[in-house]
Image (tube, rainbow, N blue to C red):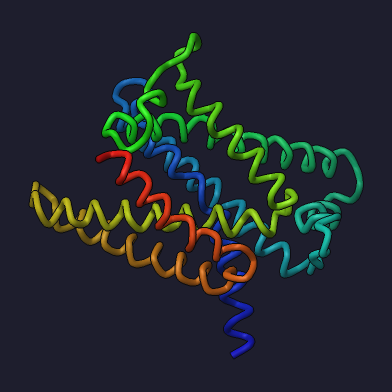
Length: 244
């Protein structure tokens, strides 16, 4: 039983590594025409790179056997890089590349959330101010709201990564499950051309992401996931009241 729990705990931690690809589907309208084809190509490239990096690091970790430190220094990736390259120029470039990737990952939220918030505001589920574009033609109110919320969250959690990741992962995979289930329902209702294959893809996706969400919730519950369980119903109630 303990071994199964350890495997599920690692599975939940690794699940957060595959998030971020949703930014492509949410921002299809930002691509050049034909938007759907360019977005699909970008998503395939992004998924392929993610797969190579993920499985490559997994393979190297079985050979080098890095040990995670409680304080996160040195990181597992740093240990693998040192084992492969030594502490030279290539190791330094690996560290710098990791920092740049993390900066880009943080920027994803600021590019994505304001656009999604404007959609909700347009449907009267969030304040109308979130639909306004600023001088740089971005949804500046959404950016300001996200920046303030992120700052408060950093202070409350003490900027501890192990406290922040469960909040992020639960929210992401719950959203994945709802969107996939919504598409499956759409296929069943509309029954357009190719709806059976679409139903199979989206139905499978809904089940898989639901399993990940449940595993993360159970294994990370005491690490902060309980906050999401408490907050999400309150937020849904608040948005529904705002809509009325």
